[in-house]
Length: 360
Image (cartoon, rainbow, N blue to C red; front, side, top):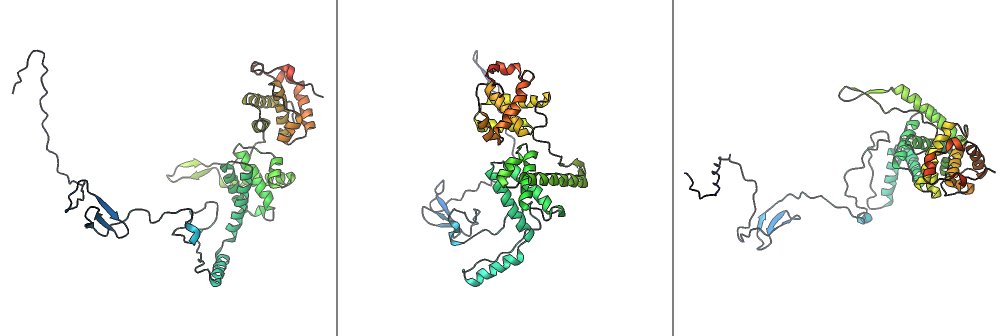
């Protein structure tokens, strides 16, 4: 039918024909009390009896309902009655050996006979090898926590220790020395370098013993990597590279500067200068053959005076664990090469050559 429009009027669009929709079952079923006929219904579920009840009139609308909630909830004081509702054990630990399936005899009524059965079952069924591994892992975790090392270092040290435990090469070796060596290698591999002296203070294992164990461990890991090969067959048949073990590089002085500067309370500007100075020191050849500790300490000593945040050799020696005389002797070599080491941009950041003390 044609529309009669006045001047300036806009014609209405023709109605869109509604297509017939395919029949579908309405799954939005609402349970309404036949007595009250309240909408929305005032219902509640009694999970203990499994009934659905109208809260207005009390009529039971459903029976034997399934409770889909958790079977129990655990609170902090739930274990006071020695009642453990868990029906499963811990997840398998990839660091341990075997299936790790165990059966424990409960204390029951707490009688002497129950305790004796529990003790006998533990002696008969406990895996001695896993017991030793757990003890070593606990010790590694305690050392890493005391040293504020990240969890990746602790996990790496545990993996290395497990590999050594399966080898006959380390039979009869001191467990403390093995743990110290594993932590030392894990620190280097994860770019969290620690010196032999710091590992000694942590584990109380002599530095020479740590050094010998470190060489044995690295040789063992490299040989194991050669035997294993660098390729592995993955699930889809494609050859992929393994995460191979490579020899750890010697700790650089620049890797130690940031941590020592943080201990000494130096700002980021001075810390960056100390790190750059340690990097240039190896390029110029100054302090060649000296330990990374003495090199890092000397660089911090020079950078602190250069940037106007002077720290005495005694203060630096307490942070770096080297003698103040060693710092002075190393600084003497840096001072003689100061024209090659000091960059113009350091002076632009506020550094002054006149601040550098003359070596005594």
